[in-house]
Length: 467
Image 1 (tube, one colour):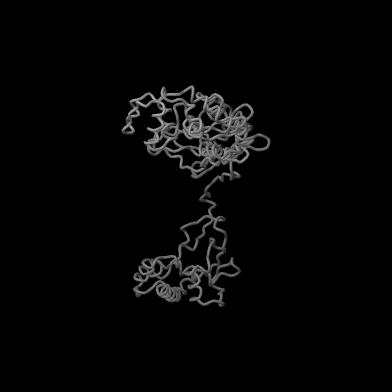
Image 2: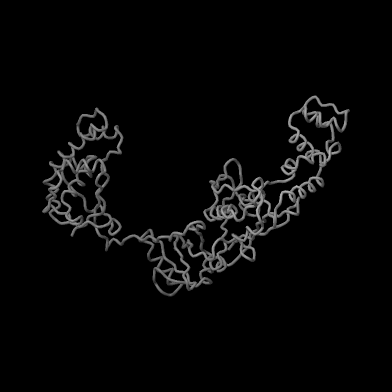
């Protein structure tokens, strides 16, 4: 697997300063998990219009975050600025995400915008940069420092006349007629140290060398935490793919937990487990070395990798078998006061009601309508709910369309059906668990319950299964 090697190397222009250098190397899965080396997963589509994968985004954000910590910042604020830790990591405007070696360009931009030093002082900075500018002195540097320090055209012309009275300057482009690097020297700008620094450096941002210890191991590999304990595996099995959420346990064994979305795939999961551990179990454990051998045909990813916050455990899913499914129903979407005036008027129109008026009037009209619809369908609802139902949390059972509620066609096919059912449930729900037509809450009228539902003063949730 790929990881990133990090080094501090001498800057090519000013060797007294150092730069970050990133290279890609291969390490074992064991190194990544037990030493916390950052797993570097490169996308296949590294061109324009793609996006950095999540692990690369987490890496870049974490590097910036650590470089921004106060302990790593030099004291001279003019030459120490924080990185913006956000970013959408998309390659718009013809910006490539990766360089030719596969390193994200965001890492290269961090390297290009930052110098590292053992110690920092302004006087020492002036001395080093002035020396470097003298060694690289040319027309471009001379012109940039001249125009930046003197500003207006007349000031520039007056300054140059001090060195050569024969110089003729009528406009800015006339500067190109003279070799400024021979007319002027760096010493001519000894009172403009900041200008020399601004044009002599590629970046105006410094950090102490020890800052990289916050994200680099002693042997120089990118790492943000001591262990990485979660990853996912996608295993290709012909026409289907098997997905496992994998967890590194304290005994350094990896626990495989299947993520089964299709009941029909269960046999494949059992068959795969049998081929690996000679036991047809959905969940099983492997050591790291055996897990790594699976990577020859499997795809690994780290979707929950988060260095700045506590990782959340990946939940595996599995559907309930048809032969043990518990049939239940839920009260569906009800009409409430978040509906727009247009939507409320449309509902009233469907039932032949008046549709004009402000929102409060429309809501009051729907409340009255719900009361009438409830009274019309109460007989059939009582008949249906003669059998007791038990309210359970939605996650405790499987929803089924095999438990429909049939009653008055005008209500059954209308947009207020679920609201009518919800009112009935609230009216006949005892101890918040038992739903039966044999018991009725007389503390609230139907109109009061309708009003509470539509104004979201009461909420009905959960599923209902036959007792």
